[in-house]
Length: 120
Ligand SMILES: [Mg+2]
Image 1: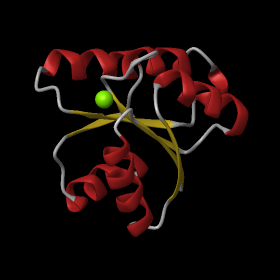
Image 2 (image 1 turned 90 degrees about the vertical axis):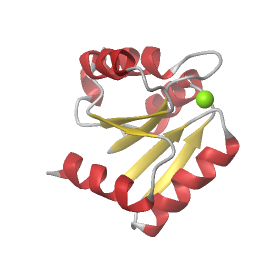
Image 3 (image 1 turned 30 degrees about the vertical axis):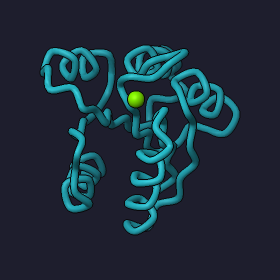
């Protein structure tokens, strides 16, 4: 699977990309929603986007809305990766077109389980 990891935390991007790599998935990265959107336009659609919620320039929610406004990206699965415990934010992201979410901190097994749900 070809994935894009969008997160303003360098450490989190590394963790996510390492887990993806261990699970056999290639990935690229972007540091905010706008950068992610540019990468999707230039190199996408990707099969999967792992998207942080809180980021400068463009947050994860606005990224989801922008991606879902273009039918060319319909096949791209979006998983929110968030520390937010407010379920309302997750609900908002799912309503905007995100497919799944995983809460930080997560284990490799938890992420793998979520990815399998997405692939099913
Ligand atoms: Mg962040």
